[in-house]
Image (tube, one colour):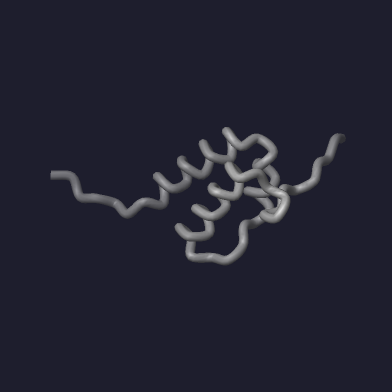
Amino acid sequence: MATFKLIEYKDASPEVRAIYDDIMTTRKIDWVNNFWKAIAHDPATLKRTWDSIKQIMAPAHSIH
């Protein structure tokens, strides 16, 4: 089974760092967990997954 290194903030590309920053700001945390670091090898997947999670976490609005 192949394994790969997690992408730490200090080693991340500017694109990945921007997503990490958004994760930390949105969630009001000061670190990114290993789930995000693992999928950061594919920045498009990282962005798509984070965008999806943000939609799920968004406050609900009443429908009239």
